[in-house]
Image (cartoon, rainbow, N blue to C red; front, side, top):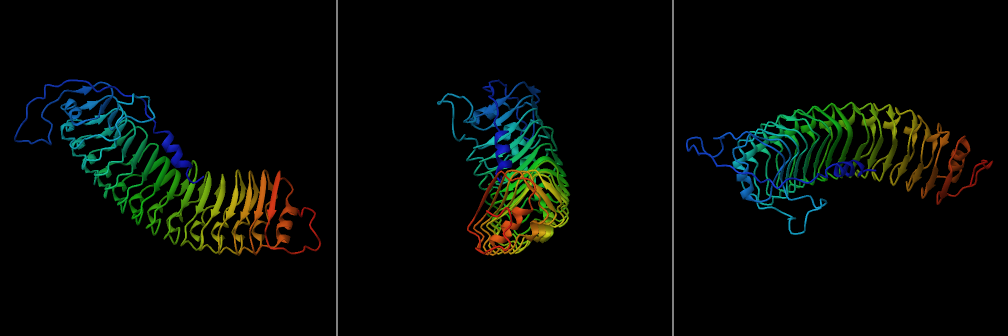
Length: 420
């Protein structure tokens, strides 16, 4: 579940083929007073797509003020059907200054796999991109300041992936909305998201993942609505305060996982509903879920797993009604009870209570009367078998499969009718 959003994003990044980018330009004249970073000619619009594979390709676009199609500063996508001798893993681009006349790109703008590119200064006049903006695996790129004129993204995704030297997102500060998804992932030395401060909405999904030194999400503080929300594998992230203006997750999942030093969920305190699954997993320093107390509705299901310091689920007590999918509580070493789940009445798919070492009762599940698919309760060393039998006895519908074993042996008197 926790990787679903990333998989959706990856699937939508498969672009079609592009043209060979052939064109010609007389090069114009150079005004030595204005210098190389100002446009000195106007060739109008380049019609079609263009791919830059080597430094000489940059010069081919010199003087054009717009491009009607896609602009790739990237090798071909390996999933496309290019001949083996055409595909290159990395491209030797070091300087984009000859693109200074460009003010718009009609389709995608992809800047990928340029190991020697240190800046995007030649793109500093671009104000609009009609499709996705994808900046990925440029290992020497330190900032995005060359995109500081960009204000409009009428297309889809803003994706900043795997840029090993990237320290700042400041060049994105004039973007105010992302039509589909915003994903900032795998940027090894990025410590903050401050360049995203003016973005107010992300209609499909927001993903912040795999950053070893990212300490906060304050750059997201103006976002008020998202479709999906995923924050995972951020080893130094201490808080979620930058998410505090988000009030709902409208179209899918809220996933907070594997943030080793995250001690609270205060930044989620204003969220009142989650359309899909709520997943809180593998956050070793998290002791409670009290900051989720304003959530009253979760449409898909709930998964609370491998939070080794979590002692209770009381912060979920406002959630009432039925789950369309799963209710899974597993691997929480210090969780003693499920009292925060007392408002849940039915589970559409599966109910699993597994590997919770000190869980000693199921009283928090007393309102559940229906489990449609399977029920598994096992390896809870302190949970009496009789409590499991009582839960089975209260169900009036389902499940189709039952797996109960290796809980605390005891003898129920009288024995519930549904006791396995």
